[in-house]
Length: 224
Image (tube, rainbow, N blue to C red; front, side, top):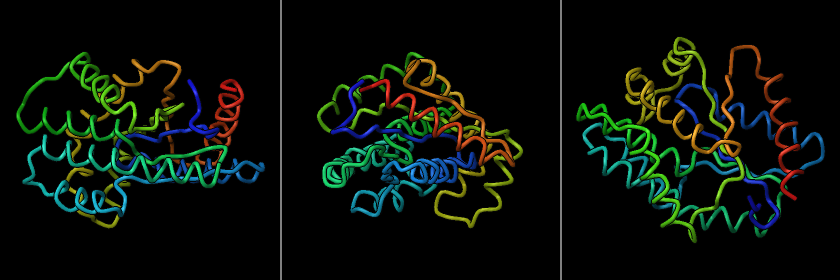
């Protein structure tokens, strides 16, 4: 896989409450302490499409397909912003906190739960491949997708402990999050060496972020 303008692009995904954003920040800090440059970007953003996605997309009465397409539009739209950051700042690593995989995974999970339908692995992957193909000139192709998971009890405690936002109902829905976990597992299996699933246990943040930093350096060196 080719890095985008010299930046190794790592996308961070996972169930709500997995500690994904904290782990991403710790790993970035570790790389910076070693002298590497790291830029990061979070979706949904505060761009026009991001604000709309957070507002309209997170309403409980919004149709799941509409929600998925709204968030997918934001990740597509924000790709130009990420590309600009990479081209102007030329980081060695670009970390993206949720990208188009998230829009697809949560979309399928919400559709399955809302309408009591079963979407198998091939249904998800067929749609995922189609989005990547249609967006080949728009999206940044990740060099690695890191999927962060945690045990369900800890996940729920973290979700309940967070200040309630517009997406709180989704974060605290255990059935939905189990579907999200299942669909992420499908993607991890499909992406093979371009995906890495990690378990973010309590009291292991420093150790895990250090090992991830070393793994990212190893993989970046391999792509040169």
